[in-house]
Amino acid sequence: MPDGDDFATSLMNDMDPRLLELIQTRINSFIKWDLVRFFHDNPHTADTADSIARYTGRDVRIVEPELLQLARDDVLDVEDLAGMRIYTLVDDRDVRELIAAFIRACDDRQFRVKAIYHVIRSLR
Image 1 (spheres, helix red, strand yellow):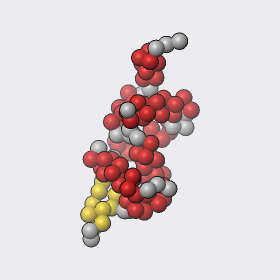
Image 2: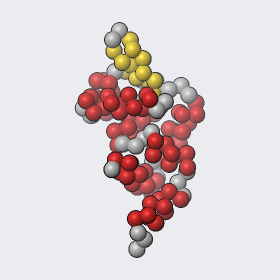
Image 3: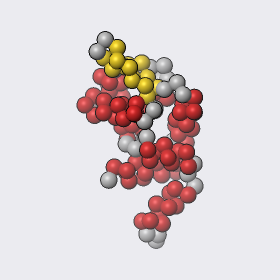
């Protein structure tokens, strides 16, 4: 049986390095994963944290800090309109294509297991 370091290495070796970097630096929580999927599935959404939390079935107190972090990580844009923060998916084509590649990869069970491992590892 491989030790923990060998197992971690094996989980990274055959993963697209762009997707691994995305998971390790931007989609490093399950909430962010859900939010990225939500914006991928609804690319024209422009809404508040309250509404996005409702759509995703999560508490706004948990969702809003993650939305702000995704904005700092250039995944989302945030704009202040009449005292409300409005979140949208960035227009950057490369970021949108990277997110689309991540969502497609999530259709594969083995990729999901690896991605889950990396998210859990980043939560330590």
